[in-house]
Image (tube, rainbow, N blue to C red; front, top):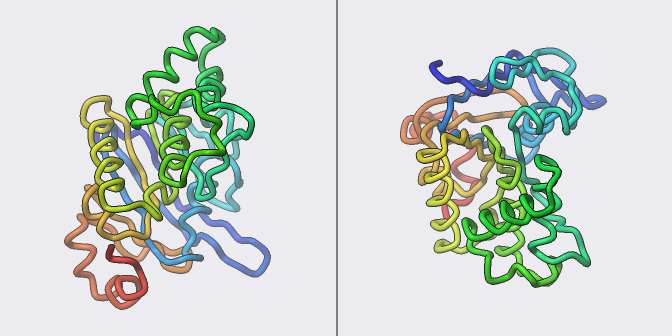
Length: 243
């Protein structure tokens, strides 16, 4: 793959009696937008945890921009250009929205002034510049999701992993996030990998879809092709949200 920035090769992971990942492989190119779908327990978040160093695989390798980062701690993986969001948004309480993002930006610059400048830039990108002085815990859920995204963007990533960042959002809010992700991929070359249950959002944002089932990759391709796959339709389309 030309311009490949992420490669996952034959990754396996077991937790006790549960085989969470079964030989999963995945490649993502620069500026590409990929969605990983599947019901709860299919291994999506475990895959993100392996990529970002929160979990060490039992077998397999992870490469970021050609460098083997398998088993490296999260801060080292982040330094390679990988940023992520989490399903459960947990901003730093007692700190303002701006301070939350400055804290993230400081990890890539030793200058508070530069970190604040970067924080204001990304807050404007996600539509939160008007909330910069508000305590983060006072934000509503959609705003907290945007803050989580802003903290990831403050790291200036080459690869952005988003774990259900659009879950619980209204259609207009989803459209805003989708538009932002498309601009990031087209204009800045950021590779975007989203774990998502809302299939409408998947069809809007993804150029390619990967389907996991009990830790096994069962389908991969363009969104319209994957949605027509009989195995995918039987296993996922029914129980997953179309809104």
